[in-house]
Image (cartoon, rainbow, N blue to C red):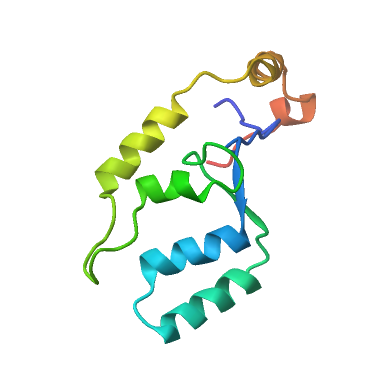
Length: 126
């Protein structure tokens, strides 16, 4: 059996982000039905340590209108917003976009790397 090793990890994030001052009112308009829920949501968002959130929905940084066009405010308490299928279709469209050239170069560089000898000689448990 060939041993396996992780020799690198890469991540990708959306190009545009929005801060908590944009995120909190957007979330409240879509998720909260009363003052108690709004207070809870604000405590969670302010206490979570996240300063900026990335989204493929944003045309540019802090563009609440981009998010509102995909997630309009609730029309009723039972309004769940876009379906899972609609959200996944958007994700698949965005995830399938061509990689920037610097990511392609890094990907080619790492794919040609060999794991250090100590990893190639290791045996996997049976």
